[in-house]
Image 1: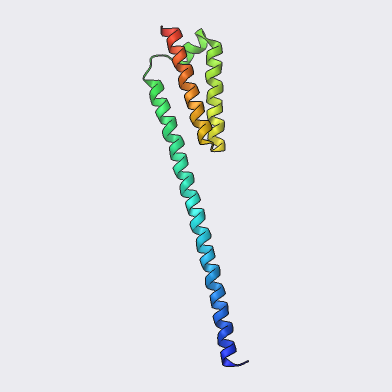
Image 2 (image 1 turned 135 degrees about the horizontal axis):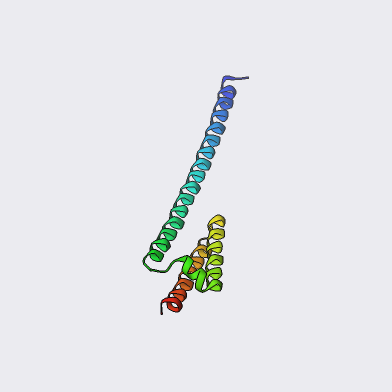
Length: 116
């Protein structure tokens, strides 16, 4: 094999190695981006949940009072909480927000009916 052919083989291997390294680097960046997006989404879910919890704490009506006086409404709230939890696990942002809205509406109904 000539020196030129040998040099070309070495260069070809290095080139392929660099392409593979670049691809691995790009794949790693993509995985990191997905991880960051997942962290961001988790933070969004947590923020929405904490906002809901804070909002609920501003009212003087407990789950026990709702359960005792309006068991059906309490069951509806519990179902909405289950929907919120399932949306969290599915990472379904719109489902999570819809469940939170449903919880808020049901709680406002409870407030109106029980505290008039």
